[in-house]
Length: 336
Image (tube, rainbow, N blue to C red; front, side, top):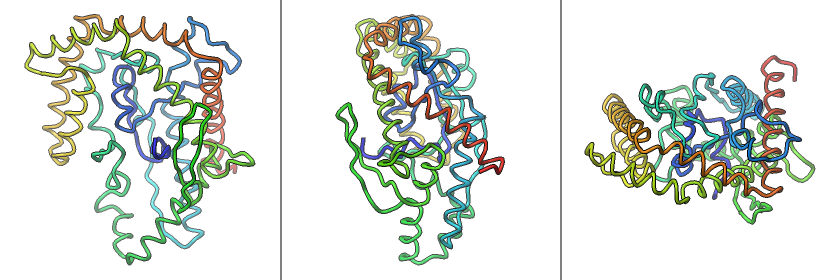
């Protein structure tokens, strides 16, 4: 992972749960742990596997965290004599299509009605991360403000916002990533998510978040590679092909949708109709081949194999989310 900051809630995200989770990981969209589902002291038992991999918080509390970070970032930027235009995040923007506690599950009823929700999310660049255009909207206040700055001033603005000190971070699971802990945004993350003596700015957040996400990614990969899910996915692919949609997996299906959005970003209606058509056939084939049942069985088995350190990583992220939600509520109420 080159930059753990791509998982930040500053940018509006539509969290598509369950079956879509595994394929969205390649697109820089991250799932979180539900803070009202599992106790920090609870052991990881087979019966609690859904609690361990469920989404974080509800939509309102996720939106509160994003709004608090933007509010603090704006204050910091103004203190350094730069304009900053935070956008408002709402609970509706943090939707879940499916059951994120099961990496391959899809809520067929919701997908039939709403598709995957890609048309509600960020524009993705070819690398799968959010493009600058999705953060600075063309024609918006921030874009017009940046147009008034010289190239040198824009560089200074960028450094003030996101910092210019790349730090290599090593995780206990052996993974390494780079992030910039300073800048106004990094400071804001530290204020909301907390810091430690050694991990200032955004560093504490990135370490806890990334380690937990690695655990979730690993479960998703083991589920996708399981014999039961691969067999069901092969039958799913045949079912889709009979409808004229030649996709060996949902990864390929979703990658096709993303490329269409990238190639024709202004063709909103056409892109949405394509997505809904794909999603409805996906839902029908998912039911027909019993893909959800195969996924749940594989997920239950994968969670049984979690080590104590992996379970602790999930609990740490759980605790951090709860604390951040409480701190954000106080910030938004003007209490701190």
